Figure 1 (tube, rainbow, N blue to C red):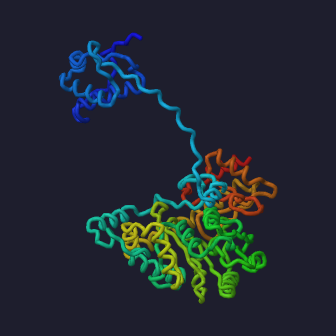
Figure 2: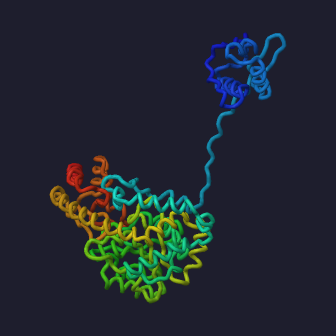
Figure 3: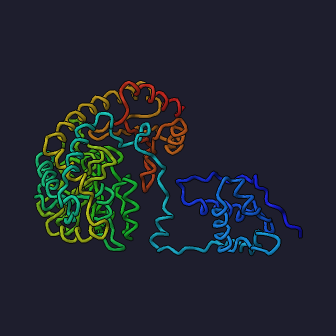
Length: 479
């Protein structure tokens, strides 16, 4: 077979003085041309003098590059015929992908229906806070001040429970604003409420344990419980939220109840005092546990924030969860758990296995933010802002959504529920809204059993001057 002569005008990438030695660059360019077939087997390379003249290099650089190719077995030197591209063995066909075995638990989680993606900031996405009014200048100042002179406690955090000044600030604030009864030593800092859910499930539950949950409930909770092998025991939510008496009738074997009493998610109802007390009595009577997820209790629009369920529990059977995702911003990834004293040690042991300790810099800045009164002032401003937006949103919905259902604004939080007319398929309605650029989940996505149709509408990050147009677009999509 005749050998093909190398074309010295073959396009090679430019050789730069700052990209490694010139011989290495030239060898890499020729190696790539050989491997991708641009230089076929048997092709004859030009003489080192000719190639050096063509590329404007010294001959020694070209000789060194050829030596590298020879060492790799990509070219061969033949007496009398110069240097030619070697015949390389044909590559073996790629192996068939092998099944990668997963744990049975992971197989089960992968089989769960994934919730439809909704990112922070999407129009009408539930639970999205307003970020344009956050005091970024003050927050940046606190972060910069901490980084200028970081102490050992920030560079080498040693406490799995979290930064002590932040734990103290949270305990003081919860006691003053929510009637939570705790000391700083009962506060465990976590990386957001999802980690709190996971820790509580792993510490408190064994496979097969029945856990009473609200129906409908937060989607992230379902996966957490199933990941530890718990038996999810749904209890229908009515206009007063979770009903302990019904839960006990349905699931007498349950030893844990997971609730959102201040602002049930996603229906938005509030659990009255009588039901709270009944749930506390149930936990004491059965030696059970209550997990109180207080995800947005700071923003109550019908009066001051409610006293937490934890403060009513004299038997210390309640674990109180909270997060700064709504009151500050989601990317902060800071939350807390208020634990009974005897649970601190096991929860800290589980925390060390998860990620050792939460980020210390953001904890320190958050502690400063609270100590300087900036957090209280920010909450006051945002409560006023959200109260105005809630009213404006309800008015816009009354103007445009009346033919489709009834809006219940809820007494707290950053979302409302549009209860659709009977017989409406809320998943179809949600898909139509999604096609119109609106991130509106159906209530059915959160349910275990069929129930009245509805759409969960978030208005927290929707400015008042856009509300009418957005609600009108939703009404148009529902037609």
